[in-house]
Amino acid sequence: MKEAEKTVRILVIKPSSLGDIIQMLQVMEGGFYAAQNQGVRWEIHWVVRDCFADLLRLSPVISKLLLFERSGGLCAFCRLMQEIRSEFYDWVVDGQGLLRSGLMTGFARANHKIGRRDAREGSRFFYQQTYAPKTPRPHALERLQALLTPLEVNSSPARPLTLCLPPWHFNFDKGAILLFPNSRGPKKEWPFFRELTALLLEKTPYTCVWVGQKPIGEGLNHPRFVNLIGKTSLSDLPLLIQSARCVVANDSAPIHLAAALKRPLVGIYGPTDGALYGPYPTKEHCVLQAPSGNLTQLTPQVVEHAVMQQLQ
Image 1 (tube, rainbow, N blue to C red):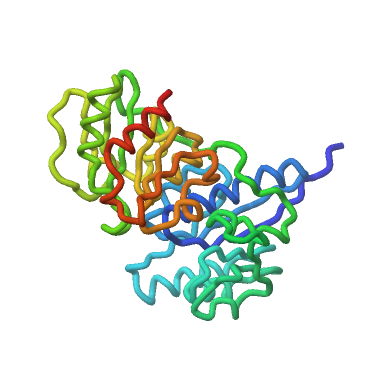
Image 2 (tube, rainbow, N blue to C red):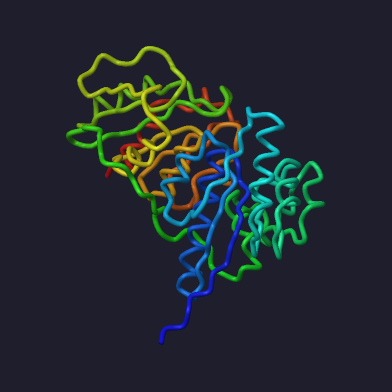
């Protein structure tokens, strides 16, 4: 008779930001399948901001989502705390490391509560153990990976991220180059996406697609240019990225999703260090660091050359 599979219940507290959620999901999925190979089933619950929940709903390794309604005020926060308190976990993993996530960790009922060694705002008070990578200058994903040290599994994201994608409803005959001009702030937004798009339309047979939520100005009058700014949902992003010939993006969530899905990409970084916060692992991906962190000094021709190399 086959031995019954052991179940370990884990609460992940990582409400935001979207890029960090993607990297945390890579770590948790890596651990999920590694534990499965050891005859252990992880039942993963996750505290996430309501606006990012649609992405985690696509993951087959997440059993339950607990929604953090940031705009819901104190009443919504108290409801979330009650929901957290209603379950009992083997492990609570706080990947956020702020007072709010520390309070969630403190309210949870669990055998073990672990958090980041670089946690802030007094959140470390709520942890039993803290963890950090042992290597100097670790990547942001490696900081999250260190949190699973006591679970004794190899949580390296070695496979493309597994997502249950909806049916395909986009039509790009010869494939598409996806361009994501938006980021979390103007200092991280490269200003030459229009010029780059014109170069790529001239030199490749592919459709060039702008994707994002914030308008960046006038598009191009070309039969192979598609402007999807403001026309896609969060759950559309994996669908688009999975089929892309190449993804070009600023320091933003789409570049991390492209890396997680093992797609060719060009990441554009300015004031942020791409070696520490770029697509993981950075040695396997094309990351362009602007001279002196000034994005205006990174020319469209340099980025176009990098994209052409990824397309080969």
